Image (cartoon, rainbow over all chains, first blue to last red; front, side):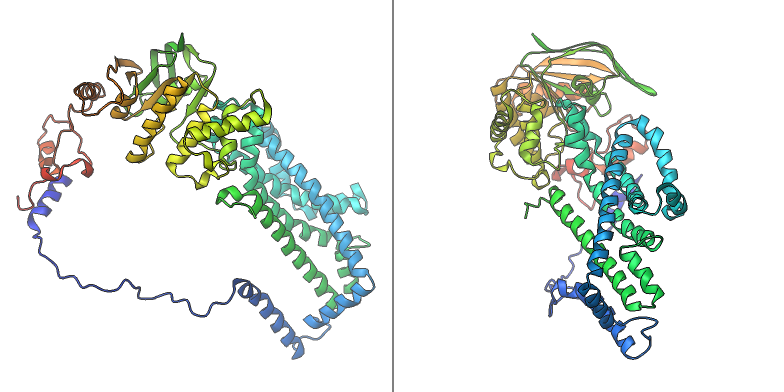
Length: 288
Length: 275
């Protein structure tokens, strides 16, 4: 049917020579590179602008120091707290808690993902439990955690670990299950045993997923540590914020929040570096 | 000595039986090409021989040292080319790391990629990646090579080069080869024996009694080609059926020739537009 139509279309349309106007190959909206600002400068422009507006608003007395300290006041508070060692001590304590919780959470999350990812029995047994546990807000556990673990270091580390386990577990598990079956088969035909497959094919294949989970976890663990330290702590950045609240020191509050932000960015940058190195195969990166 | 003996092989998937009592044997060092239309179970048979599909019935014996080359190279993307080749030597051979490295480098050099040992698989072209896959198969000195349309995804020029390379490698290493392919000319130019798989068993088998290298224009070649086309249910010659005569189909003509893609028409076969 279609064939016939096609044939008759050929038959009726005369092939008249058309006049062709020749032009230079250009676009109606040309992209002419004019003055180029370096990428790094462009990336920094936004945050710098926010801080400048913030300072201007404080200088214009839109906010009083009681409501919101100016950026300069925040820097000043940072100098003072650094001079008497309070800031370093608080940061160190918070970092230690996060590092300990992160280490435990990552190991546990990966271990669970390997068990559920490699064994159907593991998945059937553990995954429903983990999915249910994931739905429980970590902070909702706070009263129970205090009863179980008291008010020392342990509950804080525990809460951080809990916040880390789930993103790491979920993404690593998805990574393992997402490994191309064709690669596994190729490995099998060349005589790789189960452990060889896990080591050479499955775990490296799950690495991109794991790193995504790690980035989520790094954001999550800082969110948890602030809250954990604002309740029943005697040290750490969160404790510093709580103290500042009793004395209405908005400069110290803002300082701690800024430190959290910077630590978050640094942690993310570290993971991105890690990705650059570990996932070099994705774009044929030859190594730095 | 045989490299493969299979008798009464059956394999059913839910709803249909793909292999129904297939018999096949390969001699040591013999190159056999297996032709068949899509879905006739060629790949299923290869998966059974490679050990990937244990759910078959019947008696299957295959050489212990086997290697598989798939249609896609299936290189491990997060390992460089050299460790990908070494994978062919799993489990580790005697002689440890040094032997592993040396054997892999040799195999890589043999397929002409000696200088790509440290490249990432993503940076290779399709033909290069498939040569690495060949090196990975060869490095284990297989007694049986199972090739599942290994050149199907390559362009014609690269495919022709791969044919030469494969013949070279086979002459040197003398494995028994079972090549699954859609390409009749490929089968005739490479194989010692060609088989046709249809309806779940081997329906045609013929030795290729032609000297090498083989010329596709040789009368023996064309005769076998015509025969295989018939066995596969294709028209005897690439019959030119211009689409303009499509009315024939409408009129209920018994001609079942499917419309060929545009690329199959010779320019001259096109009727003038004013017809």
